[in-house]
Length: 357
Image 1 (cartoon, helix red, strand yellow):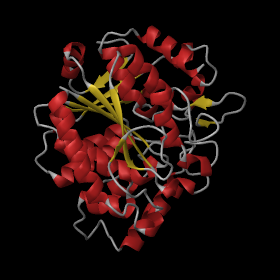
Image 2 (cartoon, one colour; image 1 turned 30 degrees about the vertical axis):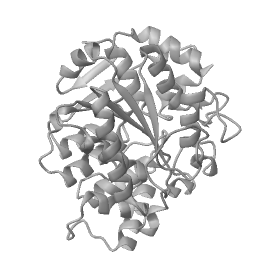
Image 3 (cartoon, rainbow, N blue to C red; image 1 turned 45 degrees about the horizontal axis):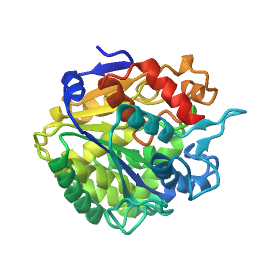
Image 4 (tube, rainbow, N blue to C red; image 1 turned 30 degrees about the horizontal axis):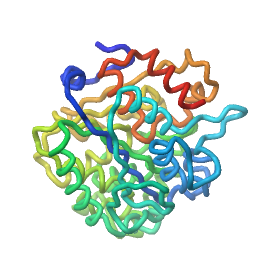
């Protein structure tokens, strides 16, 4: 048992993480124009600003400031803005001394930093049925990068930053035949399930796909109603040697990635995959991450991280307790890694508070 972590499944990874030298964190960023739909995503102060969030998150992690937009991305809540989860990720990686890279799977707004480019196209509005124009390109490039990173690091921790990602995750899960309606999480207390389902159904119809009768594969699902980060995450995992453990740092998006991985490789061994997310996702009463993961594979282990923001002196962080933001930029997995490597939860929280300012 480690203070701040609740595990659903095997806890073997905790001992491994405490001993392994030089794991690497990958923050996979991307855009889907689906985020421009009003009232769908809270990953930005306005729908227009959601397209800047992934680039800004990565700039924050690398530079400690943003270059692509005026202000730090945030969810505005009354007088106290809820800080982007990239700040939680940055603090966790710094305090645990974890190296990281940024992988651009397909951003409309490019970050002003050096990063790995996996694809030439950003994601489109999934209502068109053409959510990702180049899923195979992104997937194959990510496979190569994942294999290279696995040769240099004994463990990969993979996160993502993309606004409207729970909607595209719903699209991919539904396309692949999973019971996902009203089970995906969201970045606001009010989870617009009806809107998400309507968007996905329109996209599947325009793509000419029927999950009930068609044999849809993972990359086909991403191409129709997914986003660039899902193609990249799937490629990273399937490019890694089967002996190397992987932490997928996130919630609903990682469920969709696992569904894609299973579609591409039905024999994949999910015992080496650990999902690490926040208590705000696992405890989300408007969603059901545990059921989604169980549908995909019973061997999937989920770790829920509670940073104790109810004890925080930072007003914006307390908004996480009320259902705002919840997760993103691999925050849950980054905090999980820091805690598993011996950082006390109170010290981690203090570091996050200091980073958020």
